[in-house]
Amino acid sequence: MTDGLTAQELSTYLLCPRKYEFEHVTGLTGDTQQNQDRFRQLLRKAICTGHSKARKNDADPHDTALEALDSTWELYADATNHHSTQQETTEKARARAGIDAYFDTVGAAHLERIEQAATICGRSVIGPNIILTAEIQGQQVGVNVDYIMAGESQIVGIRLTDRMWGSKVPYESSDDIAENHFDQGEYEPEKVGTVIRARIAEEALSQYMSSDMESELTYLSVLETTFEISGECQAEIEQRPMDQFLVDSRQTIDDAIAWIAGNISDEIYSPEEAFDNQDYWNGSFEQVVENSCKYCPYAAGCQEKIRREVIFDV
Ligand code: SF4
Image (cartoon, rainbow, N blue to C red; front, side):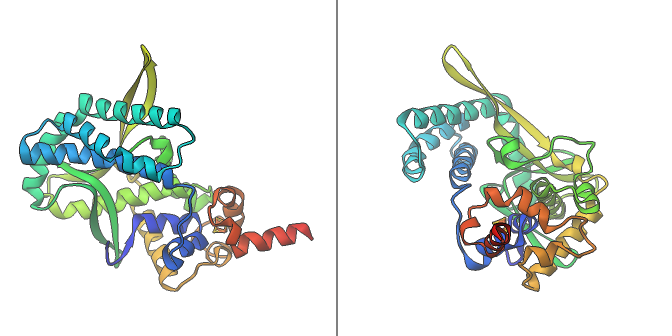
């Protein structure tokens, strides 16, 4: 927990202020994302356990990560609504393939850089879910990363995920994600959310670096591509350094963080009030309705959604 707002909370507000209220003020939990979130959490826990035990006991990180997956699988499976045994078996094969791909390609190099980060930062550098905090435009904000690694010129927070698209991490480095959203009203709240996370991580990690170093957040998906060879599931990882999306948008993102934090502090949870008739974002509540309401786990109890349906019926 942080004293301020987390990147997750800021992103949820950007998606829909009423959704933010349901989740973070009223304390309701929707069901839509839970299974996928649990699966990501399982992968994060297994990989971080591999690194932790390798550092403490000189254990093989790959073997240890697979053991961690096996030992927590039953708990995960009990909490998850698998439709069939076949679905559960397939999902476990995918998880193992993702862990294999991670340790076959980057695991050893990352462990070395985790050691360097531990020396530089003098703090815990392996999570999952280490909270980094920063102050941006007077707002205390925080972000979760799964581990921190460092080299000669860089200190990097790594956020593990199953697939980039599942986290809505942007692909197009040439796109000005933040400017497009805020200046032109192109509704991309989840992508902007990942850029907000990157900005907070960059600022938070900068406290540990020397003047000739840079800091950044990198998303690392362990199941970006999956395929079958001889009946076995194989996976490929992908890494996406997020500094490419911050090049010209730091000021825009910092302003956005201050705007959202100010609205939350003023308890503005009505999407109309937050998004219509304001100068900051060239969008409107209509975009929330068109894009987010149909996937929202709170739709059945949401006054805005119900009111719109009543108006439509009349
Ligand atoms: S149903 Fe629509 S308006 Fe209501 S909380 Fe969900 S996204 Fe927001």
